[in-house]
Length: 254
Image (cartoon, rainbow, N blue to C red; front, side):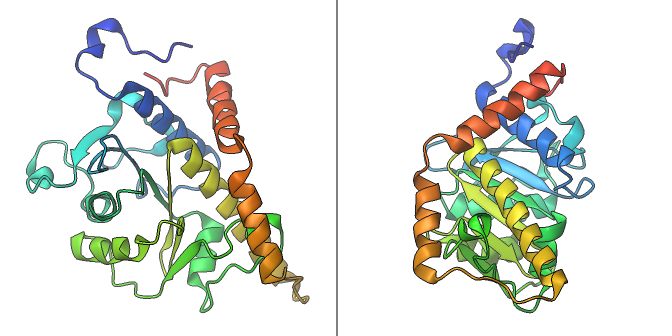
């Protein structure tokens, strides 16, 4: 199907390719049940310093979001929450803070995916490298142990402060969920997908009650680096997901 809006609408909509990618990510996040009702959010920076970003509108289900629905916001706009069509205040608090404080976080995905949230609910929320997927995240996560309630602006700013190290790509939000960042929609969605898979593997392994086979640190780091350097995997994964939506006649790109 076409990934361009009707000609009469083009003049009023900017960042169209980015919107289409983002809309596809919403649809697949919902399809894989990594969302929660209308409470989660995904955003994408569209200017050089990362302070202007696209994000889902307030209270719209991921499974229905279209490219044209996305809000274009400025993290430095003090009146953003006073304007018509303002975003969810917790989304503004968290995503606005990350885009304001962390220019390397081009795409930000915050969800309450079940296995990632189970991991975040454990007293020890570390993800040991018990398989290749878990090793992907070795020394690339930060655990937030300071949950202070809903992510309004002060809490959002505190969380953003934990992402200053560009090597950190995942924040395990204790008592809350997970936040994943990346260079693009494809890169970030791929990381979110594999983190949820890794968390599920770990949780299911714990359920057996058997000793875990944990990789040595050097092997885990080598595996993580090899996967980071593996060419084109995230892009190919996301291109296939978009192709499936297109084959199904989805309206995500409208």
